[in-house]
Each structure stands twice: as C-alpha cells, then as structure tokens.
Length: 259
Length: 283
Image (cartoon, rainbow over all chains, first blue to last red):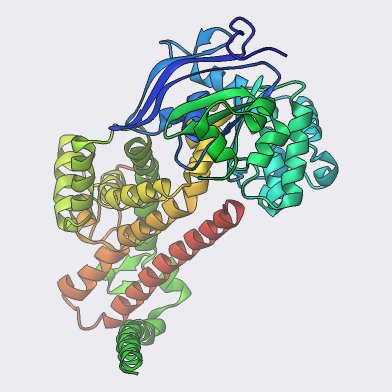
C-alpha cells in the first residue's frame, strides 16, 4: 500500500492549497490532498465543515453559485481544472456526480439514462439502448426496470431513484465519480445496496464520497479525509484514520465526542 | 374560546365577501346570457353585418378578434419567454436588471390606451403598417408582454436547483440545461401568464381602436396589412356610437356573449394544455 504524501505522479486528483469563499465567508482553508486512481476516498466531518463544498470544487459545480471564489489548484490527470480555457463541459463529462437528494429528471427511466449521451450528440437509437442497458446493469438496476423503461423515473422508490442517478452519471463515461452523501436519505437496505455498488464500481472508477455516516466511510473507503471548520485536519488510509488517528480532533470526532 | 370565535368571524367574513364576488360576476354573466342568447343564431355568427351593424351578423368581427389574438400571442410568447430566460438565467443580477424588472412590472400596469397610442406611433405611422391586423397584433403583443415576462420569470425561478444541477453535472451546457430541463419543467407556469395575457388581448378595445379596428367592414381581411373588425370594438360602436343604439341592444348583448365565450374557450384550451404539461413534468 502506498503511503500518504509519497504519491505525486500516480494520483488521479491533486489539490494544492485550495481556498474557497462564498462571498465574504471563507469555507475552505488551504486544503491540499491527493486522491488515488481506482480507490474510494471518503470525506467525513460535522455539518458545515466544508466537505460538500470541497467535493463540488472537483467538478466546478460551485461555479453556478453566484459570488463564489476559488484560489489554489485542482489537478485532474495533471491538468489544472481552474486554469483559463478549461472546458467545463468536458470536465463534467469525465467527473460524474451523484447528489444527496436523488434528482432524476421528470422523464422516463430510459430518457434519464440517455440524457447525457444525447446532449453529447449520440443519436443512434440502438447505441443509446446499448448505453442505457450497460449503465443500468452497472448500477444494479437493470433487472428491476428492464420491462418498464418507458415509465416515469419518479415512480421508482428512493433507493432505485438514487441508483438510476448513478446509472445516469455512468452513461456519460466518467473516470471519476463524486458522491455527495448518496445514501443519507435512504433506508438501511437501500443504503447497503448503494454501498455494495460502490464496492463494485471502485474497480473502474476513482470514487470520492462525502458521508455523514462514519461506519459507512469505514466500510466503503480506502482513504479518509477528516474536515473540520473548513480545514482538512487529517488524511490517511481509512484503517489508520479509524484505528489510530494522529490528531486529537479526528479521534474526538470518530469516537463521537462531538459532531 | 376567544381565539376560536375570532377565527370563526374571519372565516365568515371571507365567506360573505367570496359569495358577494361570485354572485356579482354571476349576475353579469347571467345578464349577458339572458339578453344575448335570443340574438344568437347561425346567421348572427356566420353573416357579415349590414346597415352599419344594425342587421346581419358579426362574422368578420369574430374572425378579426381571432386573428388579432393569435397574432399577439405568436409575437408575445416567444419574445416574452426569451426575455424571461435571459433575465433569469443569463443576465448578471445587479442594479440594471433590477431596474429592468421594475420597468416591466410598471409596464404591466400602464393603461391600454397608452399602448394603443404607442402602437399608433410606432407600427401604424413610423413603420408604415397602416391601421392593420399586423399593427394591432403587435400593439396587443406589447401590452401583454410584461405579464408574460413576469409570469415566465417566476416559473423559471421556481425550477428546483437540483434539476439544473443534475443536468449540468452530466456535462450539459447552460443552454442545453435550459432547453431540455428548465423550460419543459416551467412550461405550466409560463402558460398561466399567457392565459392571463390572452384574456386581456381578446378583450381590450383601446389598443386596437387606434391601430387595427374598422368600424364597419363586411369583408374579411386578405393580408396582414388590412384593417379588421373586432368584437370589443364592434361592441363599443354598437353600444355608444351607433345612431340606433337603443334598437340594437340585442346585437350588443349577442356580441358581448360571443366575446365572453371566445375568451372562455381560449382560456379553457390553454388550461387543458397546461394540465397535460403538468402531468408530464411533475417533480
């Protein structure tokens, strides 16, 4: 296993000295971290610690919020995504995102999955069907929906909707998958399914997941980053973070003394 | 106990006000039905007027109003939606856009005769359309534009952020997101604004008085540059300008009834259409 801080060349995502502001409020302070390819990195921390904000800087989703400001660098495959001339559309194609509240479009299941390929110019209906099937297979939803692809996506259960959102993100062919508390609104059984899915997807995708649930972070991730009040307090292999954290704050949070 | 009786009083007060309103509207409608129905016949609907409208039918006025309203909607809807999309999705929010919004809301309250005068100056005289269907439609379009913009912008802003984010996160451009997700979702709200606009466009007299309407024109318009008769104007003429105004009471009520039914029909169609969109795009 690689040690923290020693990887520079093989990291998929490298973040250097990132500051983030919402207007006059600073939300992230000098965050530097690296995320390994085909591994699951979990961000944990109390509400408002900046972990979701940080996740959203990785596909420039914060761009759509007026008055936000970013300083520092975010390198994906060595390219600074905040440099001038970065194609945000291409960036978001390679960095997929799954949100806390499942947000399928009010369209059919099929149309949801092929939304991405369609906007990127795929018109061949046979090819679209193929992509839809593959993506739904990958998200573990195919067996449940294959006979009702034309039904409205909102007729699915919450857990199914979230897996549909994962399928929709996969259909674009990303290399990185960002997940913002993907299971926080789901019942335990659906949560377990999502966690199993993350376990399967880690073989092909670099996954970054924000979670409130520490057991979940411990179960699904290879690396864990602990955020507190906008600072990255500690980053390391999940096992190390949960068994022998180096910082007192991390230990306090993990053992449930606050947060 | 005291609070309960206060609530009881308030509800009764509201109920009485509601009944008063409904009954006054009801009386107006019933009066028009009562006095208008006897004049309604197939020949009244399908014939041209004779003897300055004292005899014959109102067919050219019906057609004229349909043309004017259709033209107004065709011009105002795309323009209004485009303005709303720009204002709410693209324009940098600041003092200037706030000023523009304030101006639009103010325009929505400007008396219709002012729009008539504006249309006379711009379309009829300056652009040289003459008094015509085209000039009248565009004038009516200007009049209902503010209503459509305000309603459309509200509908766009009611689209949940999650929906936009879902689309953007898949690599959609801002325009693709608006075109494929935001607009379809907000279409029912946009329709609500348009429905209000249609009703106003069909019923207003002042704007077309100066820009499109002819007092007596038995023939149908052949091009957009022709003048037309229109129901509200015809009604105004019959009621106040006609030499035998008292004798043509029946014709007046008949015209009013047709106008009422026409507006009701257009609104019903729009509401039905909106209902279908709503069912398709519920969140």
